[in-house]
Image (cartoon, rainbow, N blue to C red; front, top):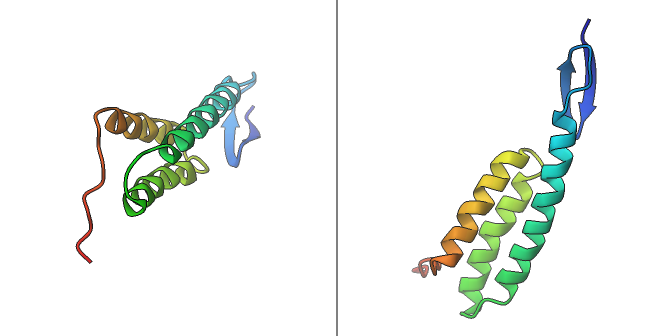
Amino acid sequence: MKKKDLVGSQLRERSDGWEDSGVEDAELFADLSVRLRAAHRRVASLEGSEDEKARVLRRLLAISDAAKHDLRRSSERLDVFLSDLDRGWRPEPRDD
């Protein structure tokens, strides 16, 4: 017998017992929220032009927004973003 379980905003079917994914999702959400908050602080403290900081912030906001739909993918994107910042990545200047 299958039951339907609402976890986050996703409807999932589960079998008899409790599914651990809800707990895992909650833990991932908590971890991701702490990491996103730290990343936002880091971006706010970056040195550079306002235009450059705005482009970096837009990338981070896209990752934050994606977390509403896919926590795991957003966590992976945040890992790449932070790795890029650690390596000194800065967005290319725009030719307006």
